[in-house]
Length: 144
Figure 1 (cartoon, rainbow, N blue to C red):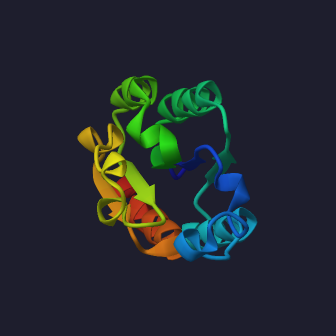
Figure 2 (figure 1 turned 90 degrees about the vertical axis):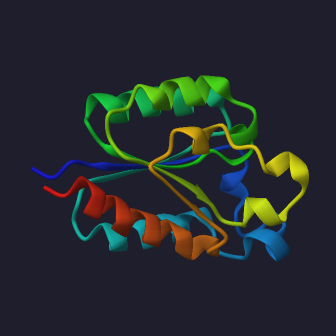
């Protein structure tokens, strides 16, 4: 059986399509999920979003237990959460950090990602299309 892919989304991403469309576009999170499921080509995919750090950490633990690949857009927690970093460090599987905007072209406080320090790969600046790109790349990384 194929290893699953967990796509985890952090705070405020439930507001995609409404929040700062000049930065994040008008695609909704439901549309992003549909794009991810299509890109997974039948591979098991768990798609989650939470505004709560602990809930995201619990999903990381589930992904670790299921030996899943993790695609994570931690949003603002990227730059603040050592707890998410510590949870991700426990994963033996691949991790792709994902950002809709290019965080390196934004304000300086967006330049220091804790997640990048342990991620297998980073995708930033492709807009919502970064999600299916990440899911396809993760599927290749997982093989099987």
